[in-house]
Structures are given as C-alpha cells and as structure tokens.
Amino acid sequence: MAKPKIEPGKLSDFRPQVEKEFHRARSKVLEEIALLLWKPNSRDTTKWFEAIEMPKHYALEMVADWMGAEMTYGGSWDMTDWLQKSIPRIRVHSLTAIYLREVLDGLGYADVIYKMEFAR
Image (cartoon, rainbow, N blue to C red; front, side, top):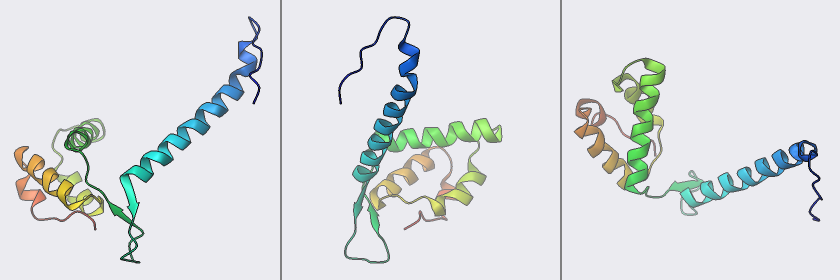
C-alpha cells in the first residue's frame, strides 16, 4: 500500500483512514493476546480451550481491578457479594486459582473464597 502524501492542513482528510487502521491493528493485537492466554485442548472435546497459568503480577492486577470496580460501582471496598456471585464464573488455571485464593485470603476473604470453586 502506497503511503499517501500528506499536505499541511489536510491531515483531517486522513483521519477516517487512520482510525480504521488503528482499530484493525488493535483487533489483531487483542486476537493475539487471546491466543497466548488460551491454548487448544484436544484431549477433552467438552472444553475447546484450556486456561494457562497467569503470571502473578497479572493476577494481582486482576484483584486490584476487582477492588476498584467494586468501589466504583458498589461504593465500597468490600467485594464479598461480588466474589460470591462471580468466582464460579471465572475460569483460571488451577495454579492461578490457588494463588488468587492466597491473595484473597490475605485480604480477609477466606470465609468466602474457600467455600467456592473457580469455573472449570
């Protein structure tokens, strides 16, 4: 694809094209991230994908996101209700689940987290 010649004052003419290219590149990056986080599971036909272990710093960031979302949408730092309804729907690798339980236990959610299982 030939690069268009951009004249001063005419940059706004290229905005739709730039936005289109940006969204196309963004979609490709998100697709690549999804492929890195999930891998095909050919042994079990009931599960098309199998979760892979999440690095600990990303797991901690996820917990921080949960807390921030609870404060923003629920008006409180207490995630008890959200954890009770959401943990069964969250699918993570078994080692990541163990780590998340340890983190949430350290935050005072032991009574909630050990009664539930993450999605499989």
